[in-house]
Length: 85
Image 1 (tube, rainbow, N blue to C red):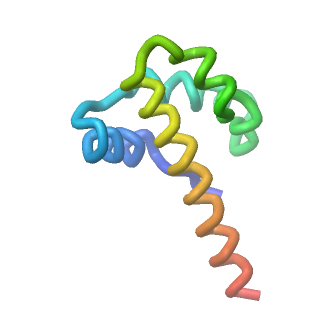
Image 2: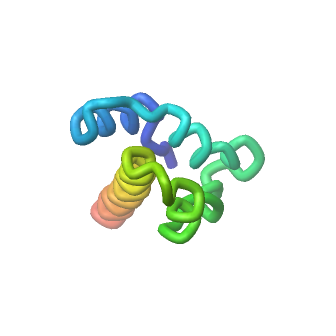
């Protein structure tokens, strides 16, 4: 399953936060190198992003938007797969 690209995440940052936080998306998706699509088991939870960005509200919001985007993308893919059956 394809995942949202960093380009997509950065576009969402620009729309909602008026800035890009590429470092946030690189950190969150870092485990993809060795976990592949299952990388979301790491760095993709509210407690993890709060621990990382508790003192940086803009990056915290970027990370939260990253979570929402990934979750939404996954849900849309599931619905498409169900319709094809």
